[in-house]
Image 1: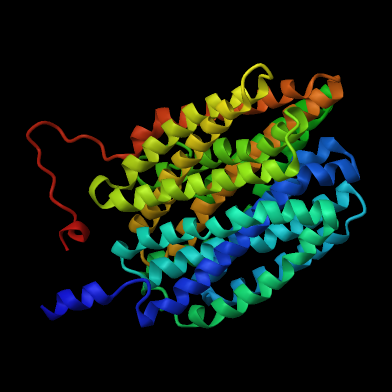
Image 2: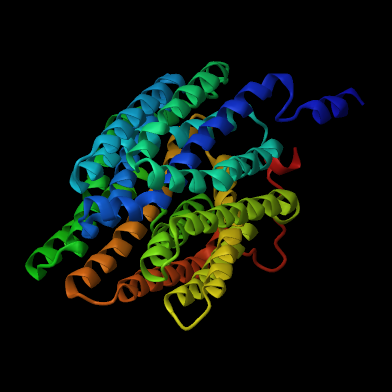
Length: 478
């Protein structure tokens, strides 16, 4: 009787969890406000600074910096706790915003976004580890749903405010105006992070592995960022003699580093946690790549105003939140693996329909409905991968495991925006109509989502031979 009552009252809003819940939600709100604001104003920034060929690099450089921040923070968390990487990440993020706000040219803006991304990359592993260490498994889906809901307010007002500020004042004010949010979220989150329990004691072998990875993690992260940068630089180069060696070097260096930074079998799509990590990357490659270039397609090709483009971004954000709510409601019965599989299917179909935006003879609303359905799909599956990783991570290895998930997440987005930008740059150099480069980018996103769906059956355990009954895991029996 008493145990049941304690379980009922132990919620995300109970006194011992309320402060951490609010702090983490504010942090996600900061990330959401930044992402939605920059996506809305980037066509305006490109018109002002020029260098449209660097459009994709504005997003890719941010994500390359995030790769470094994710790995460094994940290793620091396992050794020194949550506070140090959290404070450092916010300080670096703020410094990047200042550089972007005063950037006189597009290359300087790209450099500022790289610094900003390093600071932002430190935040997700901290939030994931805080959830894994302080919240029971039954509360985690609810917390991830609140993360999705934290995008609602920025999604409703953020794009419109960013568009108004950029057109009535200046786009630089959008970057600088985000600084007070950093101070607010940092102050609200710092004290709850100090109260998060330390990692569970691990065995000696696991501790030695964590120590070794802590030493080699940053150099490998640098190698991964360099590999991804070389790949994107090669793909965006106009010279074949430069394109081929840079692309090949990027693939070799990047794949080797990614393999070393993720659990064994990730690149081979081994069942369970490794498959969830790789498929999360496929999901972000497809949807977030398309989401990055949707404003360019709507404003630059179909002539939509920045204000109406902001409305579209708001609707897409709300659709993502709706998908997350559906997942939270039914995941106890169906399991996270099923939701991730359905997500990849919906994103594939939705992005294929989104390509209709590029056809002037088809009403723009048709493509926008398809994009909205894809957003519902990613909302259903995005946090499902997180739940699989948090559930299956070894004690004392939560930081490294969630770091690997975020690494795949960001790398997928880096490659999506980078390869999409390569198509845009190729079309620009060839003097082709803008829709041609956009079609190549969106077509690539659809193909990757389809491949992810084809491999998503690897999320599930291997079928048992007939007549063999598997014992329930102790974790589930409890």
